[in-house]
Length: 219
Ligand code: SF4
Image 1 (cartoon, rainbow, N blue to C red):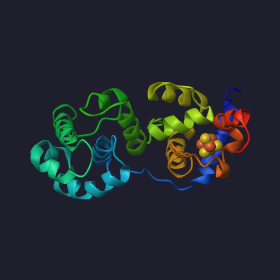
Image 2: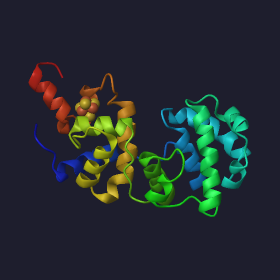
Image 3: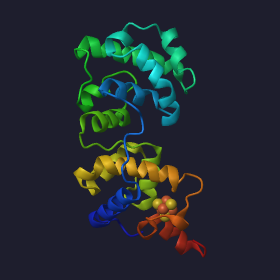
Image 4: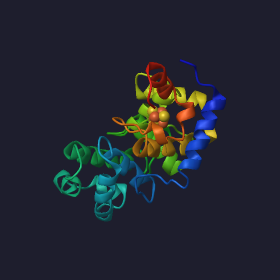
């Protein structure tokens, strides 16, 4: 399989940007605290489901102080419709308590500090750094991982390796929009089960499609 050059990776990022213009972060949030909580809630749940529950949750608990004092049962009532709501209720309360206790009630803006919070892994930290602090970041979710590997931007076995591959091959200033646009592409066209390669604007750059062409007709 032909390896990917930085030039071709740049072209892919450009095509994605032109195909999906004007994207905003998928999780609704007015400040870093809301972004952090919404992203913790989004693990293994769709963004749409999270966006349905967060307006009432943030109205009840508008800042870390309020959430740090909340009872777990009450928080669960706001987020009961999303997956793993018990664990997530506990994690967002513990996170709020740590924000109040260790960070002066503010969301920290470094990877290390964010990852010290309960329920915050590398992907969540990257999302908050990108969306709330405008730092060049590369959050790798299931769409980013799948589509990047199909295209040949990465040849990774796990999200962390994928993140490192993407950080190496793409220019830093393109990271944040690339992340949004490749997720949109994974949702709209390059789905897990039935990628619509026949209408894909990236078909001339895709190693997965190349491999299918070598295997036989069609496509
Ligand atoms: S050509 Fe097919 S596999 Fe490749 S990115 Fe497009 S939809 Fe996905």
